[in-house]
Amino acid sequence: MVSIIIPVYNRYEMLKEAVNSVLLQKDVDFELIIADDGSTDELESGASGVFHDSRIKLLRLPHSGFPGKVRNLGAAAARGEYLAFLDSDDLWLPGKLAGQLQVFSEHPEATLVHTREIWIRNGKEISQRRMRHKRDGYIFSEAVKKCIIGPSTVMVRKETFNEFAGFCTDLEVAEDYELWLRWTARYPVFYITEPLIIKRAGNWDQLSWKYGQIEKFRIEGLHKLVNSGWFEKFVGKEYQQVAELELSEKCTIYAKGALKRDRLNEAAAYQSLAEKYAVRGKKPLPE
Image (cartoon, rainbow, N blue to C red; front, top):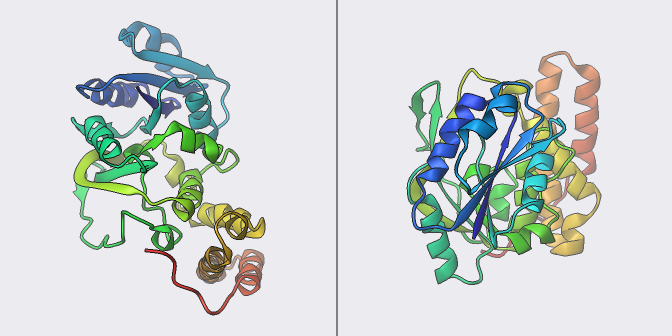
C-alpha cells in the first residue's frame, strides 16, 4: 500500500483539485491522509461531506504553521509500506504512483523515487531548460546547492523515512531541503524523466513566498546539520567539508545582499558565519 499525505491549511478549493488528481491514480492500492493544520475555511466544516471515498482519512491537527511537522504526523498515521507527499496546491498526473512503484519493484535497493515536474506560475508554464543538475544516483553535491527534489514528486520507503525521523519540524520553509540533504548524503535516489507533477505557484498564500525569499531558511537548515557535525558523524568527513563550503558560500552571498539593503547587523552576522565555515580542499564525492 502507498500512503499519501496532503498537508493543508485553508486551501479548500485547491485541495479538492489535488484530491481529484490522487483519485485518478489507477492500479495502485493507496490510502489518502489529509493532514489539516487547523484550517478555518470551508475545510473545517465541509471536508467530511465532500470526500466520500473510503480511502480518504481526514486528520485534524492544531495549527502549527510548520509543514514538516504536519507531514510527519500524517506519516505517523500511515499504514502503507511507501509514503508519497502532495502539497495541496499541486497536482499529480495519471500514472504517477504506478510508475514509481514499478521503479521500486525493479530496484529493491531504492529508498526514494522522484519525478520531473511541470512548473506553472499564474497559469503559465515556466521553462526548465537551464535546470541541468544531476537528478539520480548520488546527488548530494547538487542537492546541497539548492532544493532539487520537490516534495510532491517523491515516493519513499516508510522504513527509511522513519530512519531519518522525517522532516525537520522547526523550519517554516525549506524543511524539505533539509531532509533531502540527509537523505542524499546516505542513499542514491532514482528519477523518472517523464513529468508526472504539476507544481503550481500564484497569488495565493504560499509559505515559500511569505518572506520574499527562502535562502535564509536553507542556510538555517544547513547550518544546523553542519554545526551539529551530522555529516561527519553519519557519512564522513568529506561530506562535512562539502557542506561547510556550501554553507560558507551561501552565507557570503546572503551577507552581500543584506549589505546592499543596509541591514548591517544581519550582513555582519552572516559574513562571520561565512568565514567560520570556509574550508579548503573539497574532496570529490561518490558518483
